Image 1 (cartoon, helix red, strand yellow):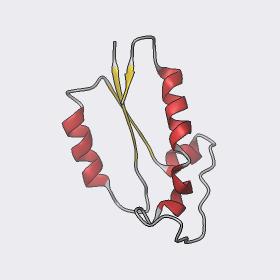
Image 2 (tube, rainbow, N blue to C red):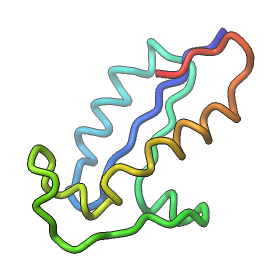
Image 3 (cartoon, one colour):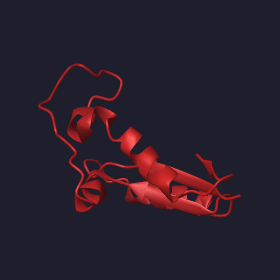
Image 4 (cartoon, rainbow, N blue to C red):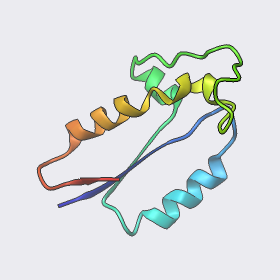
Length: 90
């Protein structure tokens, strides 16, 4: 059994330091860490649509730049294809 940790980050805000802290804290507790960003998905030939500024989302006002989080099911599917029976996805 392996534990696979998956996360997403946006290039709109520079989260490099937070990403490195996240990896450092998690790497001893999981077997695999996969990080996705809009650019990584675009490099994989997936389209992340940017919408005009919108007031539809008030809790996370910049999600319109990353497709209103519509990439979540895609990332889960991509990671499920990598897994073996008994693996855990977090």
